[in-house]
Image (cartoon, rainbow, N blue to C red; front, top):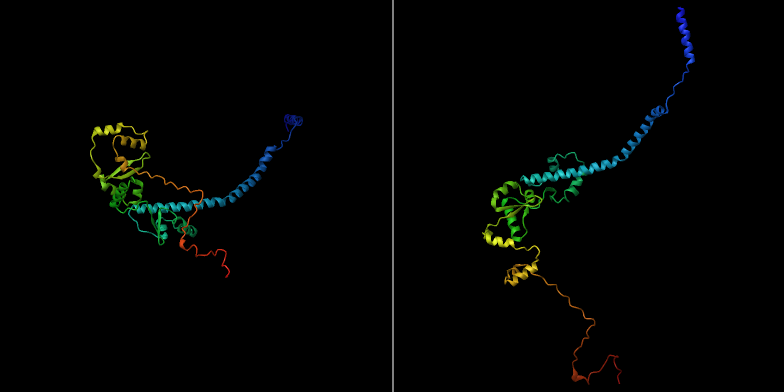
Length: 285
């Protein structure tokens, strides 16, 4: 071997022996990291256990939500078919078939039959069959006109358009056909009210009279002051047509002591003949 290489080899050994070498150990964090998966397993098992424990509540909520969802779907379907003119009653099986709710359990079906549909204010039950129950059951436009006329005569005001649309099949067509026999009024909440347009009460009021009428402020005056003012002006129509005041009935005061009752005495002419037997029958002499 080349002597130069041998010398270099010897020098390398000397340098290696003179340089201290320290063995590297695993850090505590590394050991902790290696042990952590076991803890993760325990944690995952704990979370799995908690999920299993709460699974019953989740199932209960899901089942109750599904039940009421089915009820809402049935009520909406019954309302839609009623508005389209299909008002004949259906059995529960026919309703479930129409609404495609054939996957409900027997328990849920029993709940619909005995509780949900029977107690629902929008469902009418007749001999085991079901139909929609609107606020106003109107067959045609003539029935609507009679309803509005009745409300007008009795002073009940108008009828909400929503209630009319709910109970009158093909309501838009019927309302359009009535034309100017109906008056629409929109409330501040944008809901529309229908009123009967009584054409017999239509008359023209002079513009000067309208201005005088609108110029009189009565916001801060109550009915009694208005009535008093009209009396002074010789106007008594308001008193005749207004609501009559019912005076409260005063109860009679009970007297403190009871009166002594006096009885009439009779047979004064027999005073010497009659005998007193209050102490018993007297002995015979």
